[in-house]
Amino acid sequence: MAKRIQFSQTGGPDVLEYSDVLPEEPKAGEVRVRNHAVGLNFIDIYFRTGLYPAPGLPSGLGTEGAGIVDAVGEGVTHLKEGDRVAYAQGPLGAYAELHVLPADKAVKLPDAIEFETAAACMLKGLTVQYLLRQTYRLQKGETILFHAAAGGVGSIACQWAKALGVKLIGTVSSPEKAELAMKNGAWATIDYTKENVVERVRELTKGDMVPVVYDSVGKDTWETSLDCLQKRGLMVSFGNASGPVENVNIGILNQKGALYVTRPSLNGYADTRKRLETMCGELFEMLESGKIKVDIAQRYPLEKAGEAQEALASRKTTGSTVLVPSM
Ligand code: NDP
Image (cartoon, rainbow, N blue to C red; front, side, top):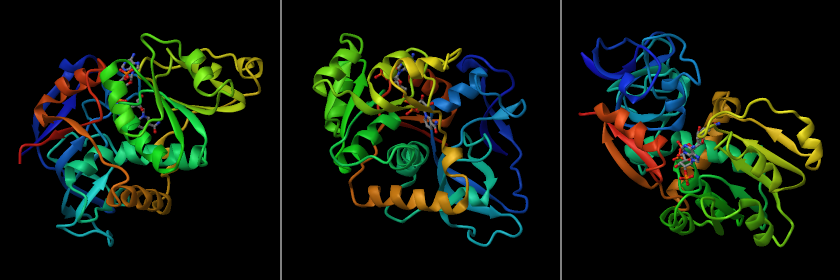
């Protein structure tokens, strides 16, 4: 038997069960990974609460992890038993000792990158790759607004922006988070619990405002984010930490200056093996060169996944969190 976290109904962290299941055999084109570390992400909470529907219940949870291939399905040629791999896409079920996923979603891990580091940054780091390098191709010297700058995605974004010569203004909810974002390379921070975000962005940019806002908070920040944009600026709405943005009259984009809006996802960008490999290549290069250091600020045993999610949802975490299966 193998341990996994599953849920049979949507709801609070208490719906998560730590169960014994029969190890699943990989089918053609699949691999089974023995996880050494599992990544915790806000999207896991959306599935648990039902904001994003799981394909069926009971369901596993989680899409990010790193470990060793321990079984390979028919027809898989690029991976073999014993390979070190990481992944950030595929079916729900990464919160487990063993996880079966399509082989083309798993990538070989360079020796220099540890399992925990990979589990802490595959989903978050690939997200930052597409946000800063594809959704809007940032140029040196540009100034941007990035919400939740001390979080998992935000901590990587601060470092990547700095490496690109981009001035990142990060929003945070406390002085400690502000300090962390600055340490990671943010150019400035705004504590939205005390300061007016639009006014601070106006001051910091000397009235220019920003060409792009990266907003993963959703409902609470939608309108503020639009007000921070220059004319014809791009609103990148990529998450719902405060709830989804709903009932938008698109006329608002006209009223606020012919704005653009996009709602991207990792699966929308890493949708082919070639694109996934290119994006991983860039991420791994940033890690190996030391331009990005992944801050694993919280570690929990796998069975405490509910506690870990509770901490993430209540803004108590900084940087990345990993779940460690008992080995
Ligand atoms: P974080 O570590 O960034 O945690 C979320 C942070 O959001 C909190 O720490 C908090 O920071 C801020 N926040 C603001 N309002 C709220 C609220 N009402 N409730 C909870 N948190 C709030 O999480 P992740 O790094 O895992 O993910 C960041 C965001 O990116 C999520 O929204 C996630 O869904 C999104 N995402 C999107 C992807 C995509 O491809 N579209 C892929 C990966 C992540 P503070 O206290 O400073 O306000």
